[in-house]
Image (cartoon, rainbow, N blue to C red; front, top):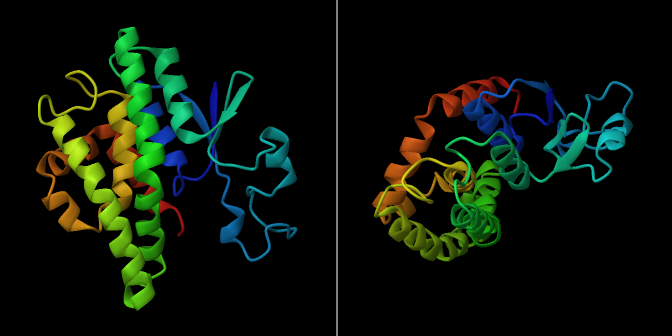
Length: 219
């Protein structure tokens, strides 16, 4: 049985979504980020990334983390690549070339897109857009992302998917990264293929199920 450690309001959302796509039965163990707690070591603190019980499972203290029949790993995007490869089907690469492209686009998303996209969502959550410094930071992130949006827009022009002509784990991984920038409507208006692609990804039943659970969690 697959165990996923992490709350839905974290990068664990990627793993919960993929598990739903693959139809994998799993156990969810909610582990909250320690930074969200006033005192993560308090006796009545919920299970969190500083809890001794969780650190026994994952000494890095990071969520998400999975235990797949005794195999423990963390890093959300790597977990998805592992699960897709293990369970096969259309979400995984069907050839060596497809496997390589899935890895390439996932790494591109992690290194070139996510650092700027996550900055936007963090600044937005902190209402930083109401300050001059915050507006400048968001503007800088938008400028960095504009090229990324253009690159993906060109990639999606042919088939509407990142790899081959079907929805794969590469689409899922990138969709969860690009979701962080959804408040920046001008970026999506400048990249219509990206806008349509993200809407299509988020219309999938497994995504909707994941988001329903995510929205029920306390912020």
